[in-house]
Image (cartoon, rainbow, N blue to C red; front, side):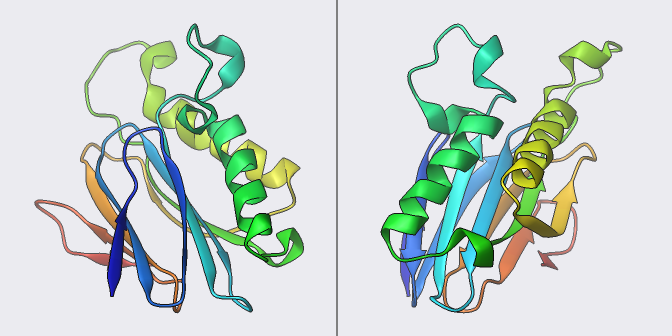
Amino acid sequence: MEKIVVGIAEGKTAVEQQVLISYALGSCVGVCLYDKSRKIAGMVHVILPEKAVAVNRENPYKFGDEGVRRLIQEMERLGAEKKRLTAKIAGGAKMFETGRPEWEIGAQNVASVKKTLAEEGIRLIAEDTGKNYGRTVSFYAGDGRLEVRTVRHETVVL
């Protein structure tokens, strides 16, 4: 099985016997989209909630809103149909105790991703978000399975 690494602020697609992997999601969110009929998968590693609030806006994959929309476009180019896409997300942890809600970027990332998915008409079918620990995710294009691994917790399969 071919492994495709999705780095920070990247979006990538996979088909059939490929797996998308993103390491060390802390406050970042891994957004995984899947077209079951075509076995086309996509993942974006979001680091900020919205493009509008950022200083450096060049890379759309940084953002929960623009990253999801760009990933949809890339998947459609491969033959996926937006109306068939489903979503699974992981990450969005509260890695540090700040005492200030406006600094809780993980929760803001999750909220932005969920809002964008709803606006685009994509159903969120599973998530493993929040808490206070990082995650590594593997998203399998063959069956749409999302494995979420952590250091001190059991692997979760979504």
